[in-house]
Length: 404
Ligand SMILES: *Cc1c(COP(=O)(O)O)cnc(C)c1O
Image 1 (tube, protein in one colour):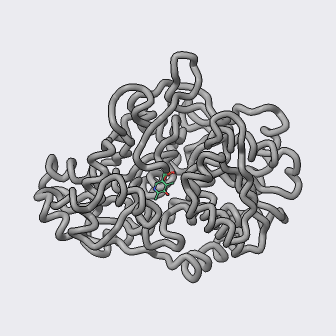
Image 2: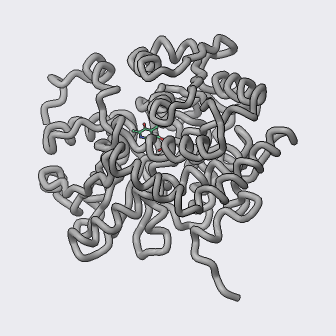
């Protein structure tokens, strides 16, 4: 029997990566997912779509983003060579725009008028509002009232970009309720609306679609790294919230002799509620329409999670990560809040780069790995820049306390 290349083999026709993924939704919603899948397969594989997306990436997003050798950081750590894929230089300052532009382009091909999504910290909301403005689509972002207060600058950005921010005041007034509210709004008008998921999570086809749109990061990085050094990187490192920036860079290396490390947020302790390490501590379960590894509390409800990086505090993880990990292809890395803050300051002081706190987790783990593997190379996906985090860090972890 012939073996298909990995990216053609997974997911299968039902959206499964091994036993993970799938569509666990009421029939009416499942039918909408099927329609999106069919449209995606047809439209996104047309030459016209591919060329339009390529043009957008180059002229609007400023791609390709560079691969950069972090010389001073490498010397300070004293181990493996550390390289950074600079997604912080992508327009809007993070990798999220890669899949938002893809999803919005698909929505406009499908004749949709409005993009709907939920947002937690507001990063997905801002990227989607940007894409909506570019394509002249309406944009409706559902956000918990607690998050609206906490993430004020992102709320302002979304409004300036023309999005309609819908406050959600049910339950805990955070991400989970925002998801329910956005789903409800979408179900009320599936003809005109497109639901744009913010990571490689949710029902099929979203984990596949978001991975495919993010794979540009990996394919660029591979070419750039080989061009720079003549060889492949030995190790790939990326932080994992839902898993989109990690899948983006990993996808080009799955069948290469490279180790893949997904870095989970270890927060401030190993007790449930103190971290968001779904692969390390989770159990198999269904949340938000897909089967994966989930952190559950004693009532079998999604557990409370914590990370100093709000983009990483999700109680589940993309099904493809669960699959790759269960097969032994994906290794687990981790970084605590404190390690991430230390890595944040190292990158500031040694490289002149202010990273997002999410990305600082990946850097923190890379620094540990570098010591273990002194003669190897590590390519880190620096998923975003830290502008959004500077007020929080300045207040809680002031620079005076971090003389390096
Ligand atoms: C949202 C976000 C993440 C986490 O999301 P993934 O889907 O796991 O990539 C990581 N880094 C940055 C900068 C983000 O904004």
